[in-house]
Length: 229
Image (cartoon, rainbow, N blue to C red; front, side, top):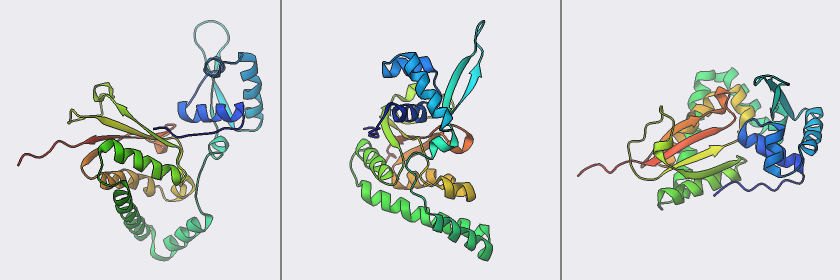
């Protein structure tokens, strides 16, 4: 049900943990990996020296500030990202030739085609089965993706669920097309529409978004109530 990561060292473990959690203290990392805080701090020092992580100080009452560690931009680039410099160059050339609005229309057609491919590949099983297949497809494309079932009553107040059945969260901790999205941000907006088309009998809501500064993208999937005959 989850993305399988096979890190080669404790440092890689720390990077994966920070990717998925957003931020963590040295003590929290030590407790999670069941090693001494001193050992964790040595690894954190090395990772900061490599510019793979960064930290911010948080003051909590009296005493020394606590340090919260997170991935740097360079650290995020360590994770799968199947982007193509030629594709970026081609899109730039198209924008210069036909204009950005026309390129936006082309990208939209591309995402519609991709959504139909997803819909064909996930098949007609249960919502859980299709969500699992969709996550497998995203992992194959370079996204660190995972999914799990969630209780709709535990969702944030701004997330409305109008169906009492099972709900599922798809979480993506990296963007496999981040370098393209940096030049053409509209590609990120189309991702929600793509999932909605791929799972056409379900409602799909965005819960988190890397573009808005969060450390992951999240989507809530719920099957729509059947329309009365």
